Each structure stands twice: as C-alpha cells, then as structure tokens.
Length: 319
Ligand SMILES: [Zn+2]
Image 1: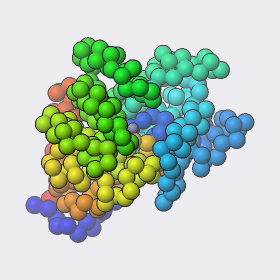
Image 2: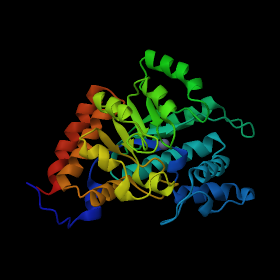
Image 3: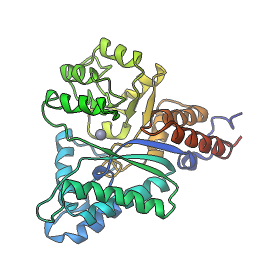
Image 4: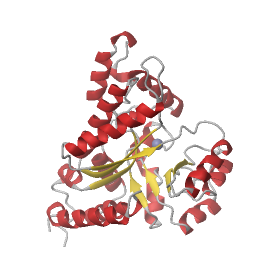
C-alpha cells in the first residue's frame, strides 16, 4: 500500500530512493566544488565557475556546451586531476543515493603533463578502486567512450568489432535533428542502450520505422531531461520524449548526462520526471527498480542489486 500521492517527504524520498546511473560523462559530472579546486590549481587559465556550469534557468546551445567541455579539459590535464575528479564524482553520486554507477569517459592524453590515454584510464580505475576501499556504498563501472564527432560510418567497423568481441554498446543517437541516416546506420548495430534518442519520435527528423525498430527490440533509452532542456534540444520538460516512451511502456532509464555542467542530481531528475508526468511513488520506484535490468554487468550483480532494492523498499516507500 502506498501512503498516497501527497508526497510529504518529497526531496528526501528522491534522495533515499536507491538509484542506478547509466549515462554520466566523467568530465561533465564535475561539481562546482571540485571545479573550484581545479581552478585554484591552474590560476593562469583565468577560468571562472560560470564557464563550466549552466546556472539555473539558463540555456546554452549544443555548440556552446561543447566549447565548455574544452575549458573543462584544460582543467583536467594530469593523472592526479583525473584521479581527484573521479573520486569526487563517485562520492557525490553515492551521497545522492546512487547505488550503481556506470561512469563514461573518452581516454585523453596531454603532452604537457605526460598523461597518456593509458594513464588516463588507469587513473579512473584507481579512483574507482580507492572509493571501494573506503567502503562507499556504490558499485562503479567504467565505460570506455569514443568521441564520435565525425562521420558515423567511420565508427561502424570498430563498433561492430567491439560488439563481436562481446562488448556492450551504448550509443548516443538521434540527439539532434536531421540525423535520420546516421540513426539508421547506428541502429543497424543493434545497440544495447540508446543515449537520448531525442528525435526518434519527432515529426522533424524522426521516423516511425525507427521508433518501431527500437520498440520491437526493446532497446532501453537513457533519458536526461535537464541536459536536453539546457542544451535546447527539447523546448520544455512537458515536451520531453520521456513522456512518449514511458507511456509506451518502453524501457526508460532516468540519467543525468552531465550533472556538473547542467547543475543537477539524479534525485532531482527523478523528481522532475515525476512532477512533470504525474508519476505515483510506486511508478517512480518501478522506474528505478527496472533500470537494474539494463546495466552492463553480470546477472549476479543484477540480482544482488534487486535484493538491496527490495530490502530498502518498505523504508523508502513508507509502507
Ligand atoms: Zn551524453
């Protein structure tokens, strides 16, 4: 039995709700606190907070967002920076009630500091290891990302190879308008998860065939409400495609994308989705519980997480 739709425990509820985060870019997830530490280490860059975060109520174009990442990359140039950033980001997700996190990042080298793509990746893995040793209540995995700016066909072969080798694929797809051909090509790879899929169901740049394909194969969507609003690919929360996919009973996972850049938290994204689309507490619970099915980890890990969720359920839902 639910305690009704009054939400007396609102914000608390969303933080206490155990959550899974599947679409989080490391560099975009850096909080303003961590950013201040990085800026203090590199005063010569003359960066200020506002260059790395979109304040409340503000919107930027997708292009401006990409430029912001260039600034962030200038602030994270050494293996020590990457280690610190990884640990801070993991701790912040844990504080927000995230129990399982897939953190993604594209390996990056920097001549000036001697950081190589390899040491970049090693620093992330070290950060994950140290958080585990500190007994943080969060299971973290690293997704190796590819910066895909360029022609989609250039990436088809390596992605296909990865798939053949048994790796899982999470692909950003239909993030902008008029990407019909690219979307077609990428869907042909049968990705294990889709990032955004913003224009799949849109009258401009979408296609019914593609929607049918995604639905038939039940390819889960990673949906990031605030990210899409602030980068202006979706005009308002009410018009977010979460509504379309959720009402079609399609696997939908609420994610943050870049919690630092877009100044959000996963608990806040759940709250926004619930309040915009009038979800009941048990629908919110199910949304979080079902996302366990779409993680890139073993069946054993999934069943362990389900056990934890079931254990926490009476406390969080106030039975
Ligand atoms: Zn993304």
